[in-house]
Image (tube, rainbow over the protein chains, first blue to last red):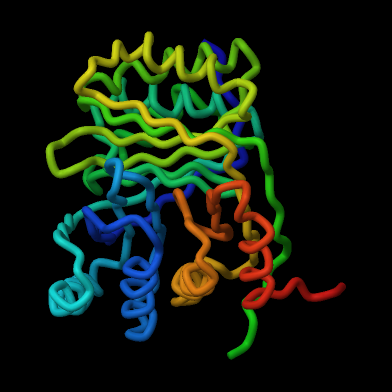
Length: 156
Length: 159
């Protein structure tokens, strides 16, 4: 199999993932959640939102682990007021970002293959202009990097 | 409040959004589907994934509208989607990309973006933000309104 050349890899550890599920379609609730976090100085390492069902969306974001207690306190304290149903969190997660040079479908195929080969469950995938990122259990990051090195060629 | 400084805002219309809900074990078939898309030269302009409370995989991706039938068939056949597993399609969406040097470092960027769009009644179908960019999917008919909202809170400094 031919490896795909990439511009680089980045890993971030000490993260927690938070998921607010079953949000009604539309932006007001989501904007309220993000405003609440921003007003309290909580920065998001990544954010993903997409449809969960016909009439519901899910908001998933990553924060530094030291902010998880404050984040959950803020969200659960406003749950009744703003109307979202469920807040879940997961500690001990890390993010691996891959910086490819175009050719998205091939990159995505190799990306999924690497995690499949390593037997690593993907918790979330986010996408940016320059990178595709995966959130996984933090202790699996070395295995993930080994698996990705079988499919991608780093510069130098 | 100061405007958000960006390198650029650009958009790509004529996209279709596909969202598939599948059992996690079926995710092992995804690589072969993307390899098939590569062989056909089909671009994927956006992809995000999460896991729902039942452990199912929710995957959303966009491709150019004229490749929709091909991608839809590849997902249905490749994942052997049963009736209980859903594949939803939203036609005619636009991908808006906000590219800025410090988007990932300053709290409140996503909040300001979504608050501005909500105030103008723009629906966001999906969003992904990390590192130095935010990608938004909006219905094509909302594009002009969305760009007006974004230009109200963002600026691209002249060089």
